[in-house]
Image 1 (cartoon, one colour):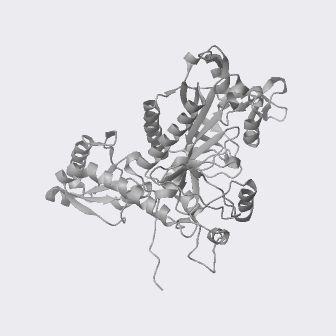
Image 2 (cartoon, one colour):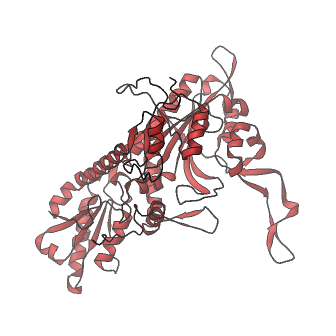
Image 3 (cartoon, one colour):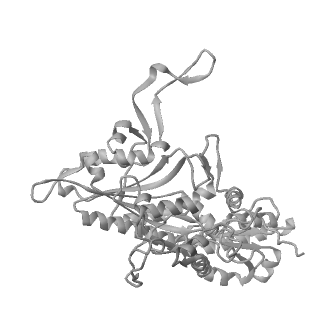
Length: 501
């Protein structure tokens, strides 16, 4: 019986995907749990990825006319009560502040001071529609005040019962855009525009293909008229919602009192939207591109593009090797990649070259360059790409590598996207019958092992009863109803469950 190839991550994706994910987050030094259930410390490498996401997305928001602001963390309970449908959707996840002071009890333990109970409880924001709506109601008086196009970067709290680092945490980081418009058409256009921004960002920067579409009524954001989302497939063939954009109609403006004088002197409620993307994207990145040796980062989002690893077995050659590493780093940094310089790190820690190399493999850095005494003589460097087998190396003349570094990074970016696209398309099936649908989503289908789940494209008549039935039977959810694509118009068909149009 052949030996299984040794991998850096145990278990492998095939053996236990959820545990493989947790191990990647740990060994790549992305994040770690802390004492409060569901809360995490995001370590510098993980936060560097998030900072790149934030910086690049923020530039895209600004290019579409949005500006950043900041709103309070605490929301008065009375604000939440104004929007009953919205609040009901979050009620079980809300953390509530009831006291403003602690005191030392007779038993020597700290406790909330009974005399310091708040007259009105404060909710720690699970999302900011209500507090921002109350603010906009003061700002908006006339059609001349519109549109309001604001985004905020912040943390939110949703009490999570089954936490997983990045994917589901009690506290997480995100951005939330909140806009007010003069007309329904403008607000709907904004909702679609921001979904397109998310799709472009995830595709071009994270190298993740997605389906864009509308959520079914039961999956909508609480209180929204329409929710649009992008849906990614990760390597266990399950879906992750990677970003959402909501058309809120006039529901929130009515609740918050966002009213303006129209061009003909009448009073009308504003048309509002909200849209958001969170640190869940870091987890999505791990599960889309990671392998059994660690994280694999698309260069457009990597905190470091190139790591240079000095190999110094003898003390007498150490200074010369480090000098060559420093010179190469300076040459590379003069080049550009994406919207900035090539980011280079020299790993000068007093560790063996093999140990250092494996640490960077696990962190997913796109390019590793090893330089030792022999390279001083030859004027060449050994380069390893993270999108190729870990033992694969290509030797370049030093100047040639400097000239081609940006091109190689582009090649890695394209390759990761094409690999993810091929995986998604291989595991996406057009399904025409109820029997085929149930077979496709039946776990470990012994009679038909070639059927294994993934994304199904199927006709559905919009029935909530059918949607609830497949949720109950198969734990399967409708991810989205794909948006119309002029290049590939969809044909009308019959519901695979009822035979109705």
